[in-house]
Image (tube, rainbow, N blue to C red; front, side, top):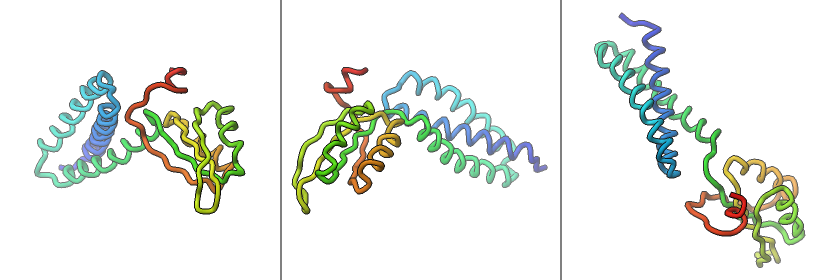
Length: 171
């Protein structure tokens, strides 16, 4: 017999399992071994509980569908959680018209580490800045740049390692 409570339990448990799985994988990639190991304990517990429910009623295709729906929702939820916790750092290269020469100083005043230099672009001199920031501060940085240099060309990537400079003095 199909139970709404069973279906909702399967969906919820799989959402939790896949969210934990997603966060654990991210923690492993960020070399946060202890926390990743701790999360995996709960992850496998929830996984086995949900799988047990489905396998004990394998003749009910609705339960299997609930498992699949929970999986998909868990992927989405895990990505939302990852975006919310925003572990790690972002390296942004910001290219602006040379007239925005005061932008590096403004960014430094707001607490960002900036390395800047003058470069030659197709239409004349440009100011190029390299800015390292915590990922959870990237949106704030982009807002400042958008406000002061709305035509800025920005490239963002995640550095795997850094040593020396502004950041290591602050950590």
